[in-house]
Amino acid sequence: MAKVTPLEEMTLNELKEELGKRGHEAIAKTLNTKPQALAVLTGLMTTPANPEKVELPPGEVVSPTRERQDTRNWQSKAKIMEEKLKNQEKVQVFLALEGKETAGKVVERIVDGQRQVQTEGAVETVIINGYVTYIPKGVPVSVPLQIAAALGQAQTDTAQAGKEFELDRPDTEHPETPYKTVGEALQ
Image 1 (cartoon, rainbow, N blue to C red):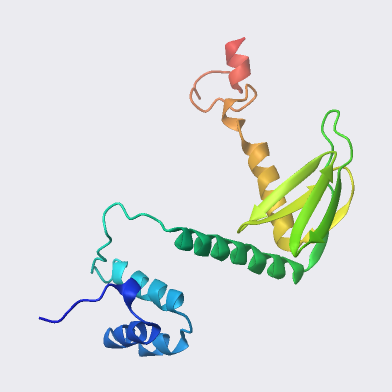
Image 2: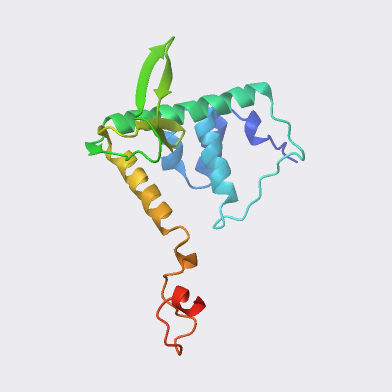
């Protein structure tokens, strides 16, 4: 009987060879790192179209090395998003102040290769794929199109929240009554 090697212990070439055996030679040729090959092979093995199961040890303990790798992957995802946002078309947005808020101010600096942000006053944050964008309120500011779209969607969601509980909503539950709104029916 042939010895079965766990996927994590296989080399990059062995993982590529396994992908080739499963009919994915073209994909195997494009992979350059072991984590890529492992992720593709594991994904192919667990999709509904291919019901093979991957045996994972019960109660797997995450090693510190794996945790650092996951952190690096997450940080690289944020870096990729940062680059994507830098290359996008910019649009002008203005976020109104609410109540006693003061105009916002954002100061960004790079210290030892790390982005540091200081905020003052009213600031709105938008997080996309781990990358945080700070938008000051009360002043016009240029932001990437994707950030503007996220801000617009958030404002739309906020405006729609609770509409079904307003007293001046149409009374659709009792169309036979002469009242046009729920508030009129309660008076």
